[in-house]
Image (cartoon, rainbow, N blue to C red):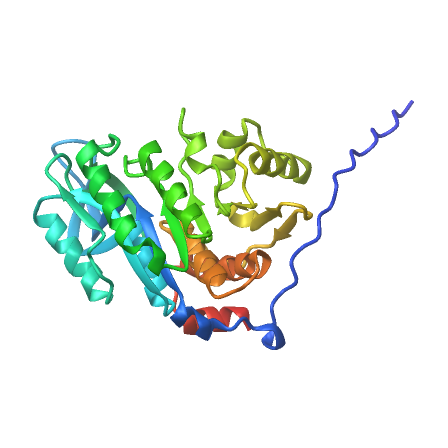
Length: 345
């Protein structure tokens, strides 16, 4: 006797954002009027490109024949680079070492036409460098030079002094957190106090959840965790759209946010705003080569969109298009206005 099939569990379906077309193109020219402050962990991305044709006789490891090397802006500085590539103005604020790599970093930032006044040099930590060895489009190994302790009193005082002098000049603030020490309780308390005194600015936080750090992200306009980070922050698995709704709603309430934008890789993005339904946005990526820095691109576009007067839905849709472009490139990459316009069309 055949057994009846089990009843299918109903999963709520949420509306998807409409696809942009030529008649609804966002006014990207407004990006040039936006001025964004980026605060966070400033990193130099060092890429070593080569080929592998043999195994070392000394150990069972590949021998990479180096063809070229690149030094690029990474971490919070990659957010800066993305904003500049899209025509916006931006300033970076972070703490680096008092070393030769800090000189290189300052040159890379100045090369974008951005000021370096927000860069605090300290003898208590090195300038952070992530070195990736890549052969035949595959990452062979990565090694990091860094210290991951919170800012000391002197470093924090100098960062706050920069905020006191310049915060009023910016239309929006991005906090780019890589859990390397810059984004700490002292900094976030000072930032929130000064934003309140200015009557508020959009505050976009790209969080790196670790034990004891959740409240660092409270009070933001929007946070942009990826799916795994959202699970950690909400303390639950995300297996369905119902789970997605529940996790985003929990973060919205516990962190007193205006919105949560969860980036979900090949599943696209999901945006939950206070008082509105969850919206899912299908991915625009055609081919994925490298996800390095894709989250930086998302927060950069989101900040530019909000500073230019877009609502969160339109800005999130635009960020989704930009992320779809950047994951199709190798290494720490950015998106141009022309690329973004073409992707939207």
